[in-house]
Structure formats: structure tokens, C-alpha cells
Image (cartoon, rainbow over all chains, first blue to last red; front, side, top):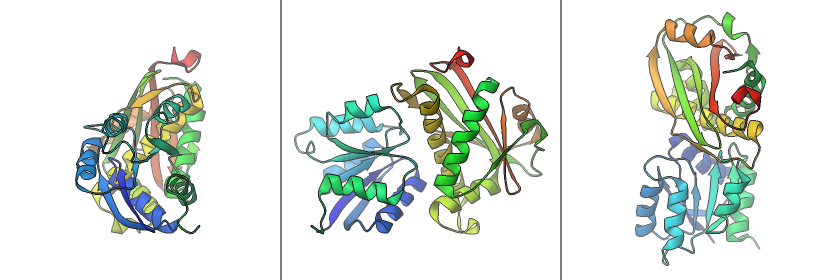
Length: 128
Length: 161
């Protein structure tokens, strides 16, 4: 089983690092889409089947919190799980986000294995 | 800015530099760091929420390329100017996130601004920053780095009041 993922981060470097980490961790992907902010992410989600979103919080145009709220408020996208990948260190904010469709949190900087564990917890282990 | 932030600032930056780019740096006296021979660049990230302030980093374009190369797993000459600035912005963003948690704990909520870059800075900008109270100097191989944290308000102890 392979997954369609969406990486949302305003840093091209981070998007490349996440893609590399996904390969290193052996996460089975089909399509990996990219978006530089929440607005772009919503446009990608409208046009493609996405199994899971990896999203930063602090981004220009539309930040990750607003993007998550909009996804959760829309019946057609509310079930898409989101893993927050951020330098955010506030457990208060992360706990609040987990009341919506946020199912995991990986703090930057991260190791590939941390990303893999969060993904498998969200999607299930395809090897099992 | 206060000397009280120097150690946590240097600690968060070196930790993130190692983890993001696998680059090691040593803390040195900022006042003794000579301005780079060419122009340099600066990255700024502001924060609001439970506290307000700004973190600033100044270094050389070569150091920025080393950071990008380390993060992307490339050689420095394989990276573009765009890669270098983007990687340095992300480095400072992550370092500030770590630093704020170190200083204020995990209950506090901060909103970081999008990092901004200034390029082509001359030695007078370097000299002004290195003489600021609380400025931190770092040296990674031959690459000098200056850091500063300016706090307007926040739960950071007496230095932040």
C-alpha cells in the first residue's frame, strides 16, 4: 500500500528535507505534493486525493492553524489526518490542535525515524 | 538585550546547527570577531504571543551555503543563493523555537514571523551588531556568526522585563 502525501512548508529546504526523510525512513509513497503555505495546500487538496498532510504552522499568506481549521470545517476534507511538523514548542497549542484533525506532532529538527513513527501511527503500518 | 540570554542563545543555536546541518561551532567573544572580508547577510525572525522580541543572525554567504549543503546532503558548490538563504532562514526559525521553549517552557505560546533576509551588508553592520550587549559570537571552521536576541516583553525572567 502506498500513500499520497502533501508537504506544506514555506521553506523549500524543509520540503526537500522531509522528502528525503520519507525516503530514508522507507515510507511507502505514491504521490508527494508540495505547498508553500496553507492557501496553496487547500488548492492541492481540492484537486488531488491526499491521504495525509505534513504541515508547518508558521507560514505566510495562510498559516498552518488556519489551514487546519478550514480543512476540519469542510466535510470533504475533515477526515484527512494532519501531522504538524514545526519548530513550535508549545504543548498547549499542540493539545488544542489535536482536538481537530491533527493526529501527530514532529518537532523540528527531527530524525527520519521520528517522521516514520508519526506517519505509521497515523496511517497504519503497511507491512502488517 | 541582556547577557542573561547569551548562554541559552548559544546553546540553542549550536544544538540546532548540529542537528539540521551537521555543522559544529564554538562560542567566541563577539567583540573579537572581525568583520568578514566580503559582504555578509543577516536573517531576522520576530516573535509575539506570550512574549515579544526578535532574533538576528549575521554571517557570510559561504556559511549560508554550508548550512544549505548540510541540510540537503549536498556539496556547498551544488547549492544556489536561494537555497542558502532559505536554509539559513529555516535554521534561525528552528533555533528560535527551541530557544523560546528553553526560556519560557512549553506552556507559553509564541507566534513567529516569517524570517526575513538582508544581503550585501558591509562591515559597519557587522561591527554594530558585535558590540551590542548580549551579542553572541560563534565560529564554525573559518566562518564567523553573530547572534542576538532582543526581548521587549515576556516570561523570560528579570532580563526580559
